[in-house]
Length: 117
Image (tube, rainbow, N blue to C red; front, side):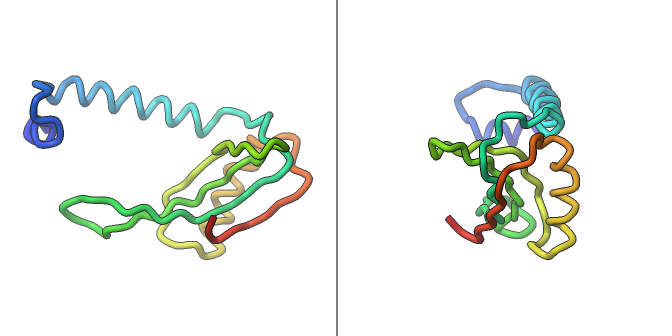
């Protein structure tokens, strides 16, 4: 891992150990994010499939994230949850929403789905 870090941050002098510790902290923070209640999510629930371009030596050049946003009356968006998926068919969306729904209380007045913003 040290060679990868050296390529990414050549002048940092960072070794693999601090990077591994950082990744562990990040993993704990992400787990906490995906479990915390979304009490102040706003009036609307917006759903979107977001394709992200990634640079890596292997694998597909894009990844798909299913994302749920809460839209507040002032127009501010809040990310409520996201899930990496292989596609936008019914099954991944159902699984994502089943995992997300216990965290969203009270349920929004309306639900909108957009393919692109």
